[in-house]
Length: 115
Length: 112
Image 1 (cartoon, rainbow over the protein chains, first blue to last red):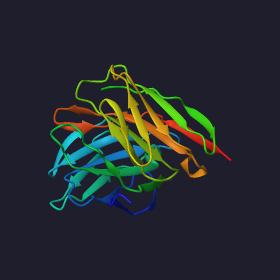
Image 2 (image 1 turned 60 degrees about the vertical axis):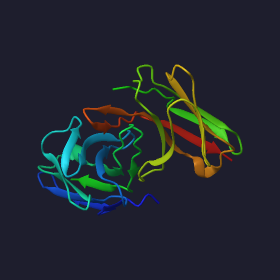
Image 3 (image 1 turned 135 degrees about the horizontal axis):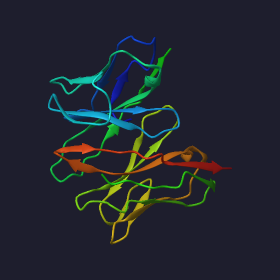
């Protein structure tokens, strides 16, 4: 067990709706990253938060947004859901390290189905 | 951002040693190499991480040659429960953040 938890485990939404996914980081970690994993593909980096600020972003549109809270938990928000947003959404926490030896620990994911 | 190349799939019999090689020709000086294991519908699980030469832990070994353009994950005496997808990652610390890029991974099938 990594100590990273995500909720909900499964979710069904319809096109155009909005969704919020939640992540609780491993104790002591100050950085959280979010990934989208489509069926049969590797996880794709969405963005990363460090000390409540977005600290890097992958190739995802602005309707994907996030928050990190003072306790380092995090939310991923997706507006105007599209069918292609159906995927496993993964949260990973880490402790930012100056020597770049930063290891990410993943949660179990939230399975989102958009109909 | 360093790109990685791995075999798409591998089969192995139970009890054998499995070696999965990953190519990362444009690895940067500061990059570390990390391997993850993923079971269906679960989050990736950290296996091992290294910078050069050899790293060993309780589940695997990681061999990295001097030029660091490739790495090999070695799983000793695999069992059926090792059937999973294995990802090789090279971290890029760009602009002060760690952007981790997953490839398609290697699907390992362990056969009884």
